[in-house]
Length: 223
Image (cartoon, rainbow, N blue to C red; front, side, top):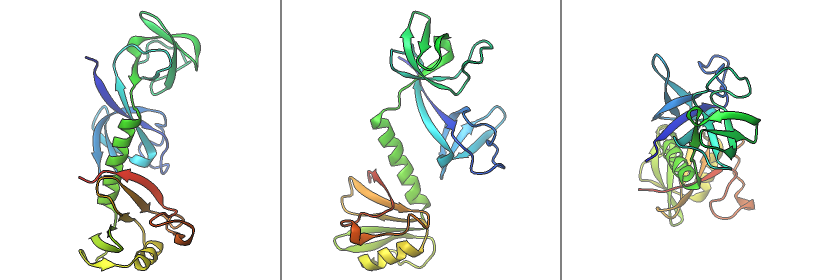
């Protein structure tokens, strides 16, 4: 049975002062998540990376098939055509090596890479985890029941937990506050607008139906 691994790959850094600002493209073994950050294993200690600055990659250690994406994890030799952290696409697959579409006839040993197995189902699971974290870290959460919105959580102390509010109040509140999450409708598969910035908070309900907004929309499963 092939071994499943998880890595965190740096895509950007929120500031030049971040410890990973000079590590763009680098990959680190994942140790899970903590609040809105990935926890990674570095040579000397565990470190944290903001989730919006990285991507989670799930891999299998096995020979690649044509068309599969691979993550370079243990580069052999001094060739400068590819490096650890590169994501390439298998083109020709032989007994011990592959070539890739991105770098032509350069041979890459099976020992140098792992096959990326992130798929739609796994990505939905990652979205579910991310949205649960967003709900946990939100300052205010409302839950829609019928035509009322009930106070679900409030770090600011200005929403009564269990109190019910009108749609007009929730729209106004989302326009004027940060990190507001609304959980409407079906508890098994709900659409959650997450408002985190001034631009995203500019709701325009007259141009959309029901709970649609300019906020980012994601699907989560409530347990």
